[in-house]
Image (cartoon, rainbow, N blue to C red):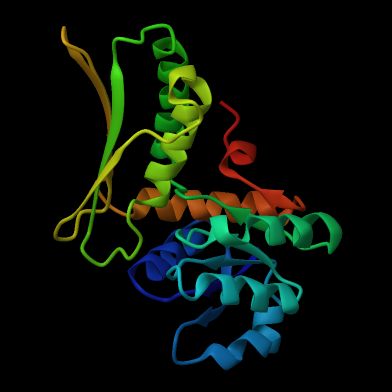
Length: 230
C-alpha cells in the first residue's frame, strides 16, 4: 500500500517506521514547510493519507486530501466535533472516505470496550459517582483529550442517571507523558478504578497503520468500532 503522511513530527516518524516494517511504501510526507506537496503527483498516488497534526490544521489537511482524491486516516483531536456533520455529508454524499478516531491504540480500543461494559453494570448501582482523569504531555493542545471525551460519551450512553451529560473530566499536562486515562467510580463504601497507561506512542502508530490498511478496502466515514469489533 502507498501511504502519505501528513504531520512529520515524532508521531509521523513513528508511523513511517511501523508502516515500512509492515511492508508499505511512504510516497509523500507533508509538514509545515512543504504544504504545496498536497498538489503533487506523489501525494495523489497515495492509497491513504495518515494525518496526525493539531486541532488548528487538521480540518484543512483533511479537506485538501479530499480535494486530491485521497482517503484519510486522521488521529488529530479537538476539531472533529465541530465538523462532524460536514464530514458525514462529504463521506455519504460526495464519495470521500475518512477514518477518524480520538485514539488509535489497540490497548485503548480494548479499554474502551471494558469501559462501556463496566458503565452498563454500574447503571444499576446509583450509589457510585463516576468521573474521569486524563494526563498527557505538555505539548498537547486540546483539553480534555479526545480519548477522555469519547470514554465519557460512552459512559453517558450507558448510565441513565447522567441524563446524557458527560461525567466530570479532570485534565493534567505533565512532562512527556504519552497518555493516561482513568475511570473512577466512587461510593461511601469503596472505589473502583480502571486505567489505561500508554508507555509510548508506538501503540498509536500501529493502530493508525492498521486503520490505513482497513481504509484502503472500505469507503465512507469509518471509526475505531469498524476496525475493532469487540
